[in-house]
Length: 410
Ligand code: HEM
Image (cartoon, rainbow, N blue to C red; front, top):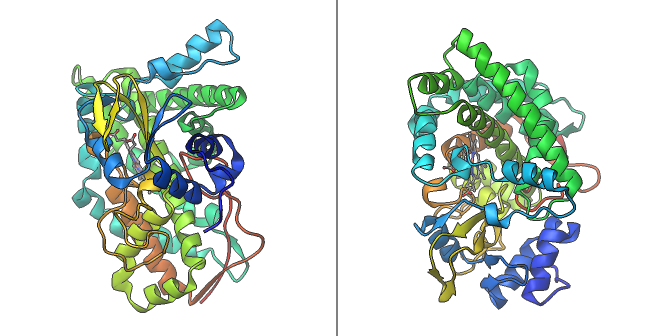
């Protein structure tokens, strides 16, 4: 394992959240943090948890919530801008950003579309879509991010929700800009860009809702509109916010499962050979890809009560980070956790979070990941990384690649 320059837990956290080096290579830093101060009250004010059991305890705890209004920084902004952006960052109008009872109400409206059983029905159309995308892979090198990792999940969620195909590429950079708010340290330029992008997304989805209200179809957006029209289940703003959340969460993360996952496999050729020889390993392999390099590295909560976690007393009002990527490499939970092992059978990773906000799209993401692996192995006898090492996105919360150049051959 590479050594890390910082040894003090606060210096490690500062590297992780505020430096490109730390964000690009978090795992040795997580390991150092976990061994020195696994439940750490940082000099920056927030607490950081790096053990699996502590993260799970936090996310399942009834004494935590999502109201970060006291924790939003407005550095370098005018009062008016600060107020507008604080409202935007703390917009509590979809399931990801609300607490019960609003969370329960908002999540219930979409749950049925994402149960493992409903999702399984999508299998044939996802297989056909993957086959179609792989047909476009010639003998030239391919940027897997552009040719597969983005188009597959965006098409799947776009079809489910009812976002027209021709609009999806324009929405991609807007979604990417908005996800900047998930980072712990955000420059004021990135914040402004996120704010503008959010306004454009809201405008777009407001238009789509109006269009779909006039011409209903068999899609999830129409179902949400019907719920809104039936009474007090959903306001117009919540409807638009929910549509944006589902669309964004549906592809931004799964794109990185495919990218990070394929990279891990290509960097561990023995494991790739093992998987090729035994397809029953595809299912556990996807769990291992999620564990080894999770597309989501952290989840934050605010203590709404005094909490006791891992022997530490955490006072009400504290912001607490569950470092999911660190939990996934906790030696108390996973044997030899730095080893990539497609046959590992030690229970699920923390990558989909836990408790009431457990990822709604987990079954869909798993299915897409399994189909991609299976079809790639079927179609291509060799896959090799080409060119310089792939560039990692400069963000900690959402971890993924900018590009992934691979040469495939039958
Ligand atoms: C590999 C892919 C994915 C990963 C790693 C992932 C990860 C996560 C995590 C960690 C959370 C919890 C956040 C928190 O506790 O604050 C979450 C929530 C959520 N995810 Fe995913 N996700 C993935 C794919 C998807 C897909 C395909 C969808 C489909 C729409 C989706 C929709 C959601 C939604 C709606 C929530 C909010 C649930 C709630 O707050 O009750 N995700 N996801």
